[in-house]
Image (cartoon, rainbow, N blue to C red):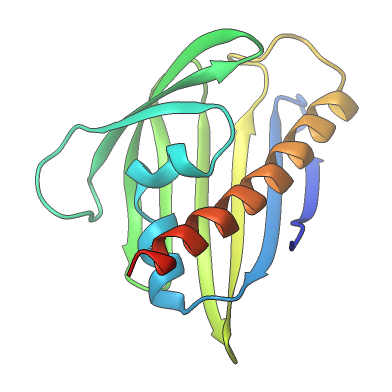
Length: 165
C-alpha cells in the first residue's frame, strides 16, 4: 500500500497557518483518479473524519461550485463551506473555505506516468481557528497520520469502483 510523502511547516510569522503537502502514485488511470478525487462529494469515502458532503450549487463540478462538509474533529462535530476556485479536468482542482470552524485552502494536482497516476495534495490550514491549542509537532503528527489513512482509503475506494465497472 503506498504511503503519502508528507511535509508540513509553519508558513506565517504568527505561526497560525500550516502548509501541508502529501503525494503518492496510484496504479490507476488519471481519469479514474481525477474523477474520484476531484469530486468533493467523494471526500467522505477517503478523507479522514468526514461524515457528509452536500453540494450547494446545481450543475456539473466547475469553478464556483459550492459544498458543505460535515465531520468529526477531536470528538466534536464540525462543518465547513467550500468553493471551487480553480478547476481543470484531469489536471487540478483547488478549493477554499468560505465558512465554518476552519479556514483553509487545499488542492490536488494530477500527472499520468506509465500505468500510474501521480497525485499531489496540498493545503494551507489556519490552526488557530477551529483547532485547540496544541504543539505544532502534535498537529504535524495528526496531519501525517490523516494523510496516510486517506491514501489507503483512496486506494481501496478506487479499487472498489474499478471492480464494479
